[in-house]
Image (tube, rainbow, N blue to C red):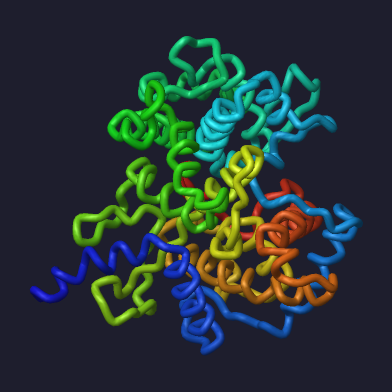
Length: 412
């Protein structure tokens, strides 16, 4: 027991890596292929057909195969305008533009969990109505432009003190929430932004070395780590987990270390104190993907993008369910109120990560491209996420996922 206690902090730190996400997801897939999972069966014979659909969607959306990375910036595009780049265009100083881009991306990603099927956002600037990720993105952008996250109530920036003071009512007003336009997880989103403000304020050496503490201070922190103007993507995630990890609800701790988006599954064994645990770090990785471009805009080359994993969310996961690669042992469970800590959801997420690694080479083979030119971030954007959304629209009137998940706004 004493050895296990000493081993716990080391095992916990290992879980805060993409290698742990990838390795344990692969174990989940192996269990599925052996028929040992409680909720799902796996049929890899159906994976080529899923790859064919992904390639069809890619060729329709990006016939030149010039696909940007999967990132929050894609969701700021509306009515043919890149609203995110427009918002940053008037900031002349490259470093301040990078900080503002980080402020925007971080706040927006934290507000990006599933909105529910009934929510809509009507954007006055473009005159269009949006829902889901695009609506959440533009709503958060408009809040930022209105100074909702800034200490002076005017500028695009986000300040720790203002974030800490945000309420669910503030988010509701910015997102046009009402009894007839409900948003799932409203309180959870507000708590995340408050925790973001508290975390940033408590760590001025990272977030406020040159300025009042703000999430955008992470831009300077990462820029300083770039050797010869080069930075591995895994360093972005390491910084996000190390310096922003405290914002996530501490559902599970190990050795006194909060594990964030990590869940229990008894069949996932590692032979150490982390037995029975599987990490995903979905929103942290989504955020890491979304911080790549602001660094690139500032002249930093981001390498090893495939060091990040695929994202275990319901569009990617829905692709595999709707294509029959994954099947529920109990079909009725699809309509049950499945919680994020249930074996069903944990298995679905682990299988999704592993299957994204399996489908990516099939997609590249069909397109005639290699992994260096076509990393997983392009497969996701091109891609698996879009194919999952298309299937959802074709198969269900509300375009929702094939499996119902009850979320508090901090996971999906």
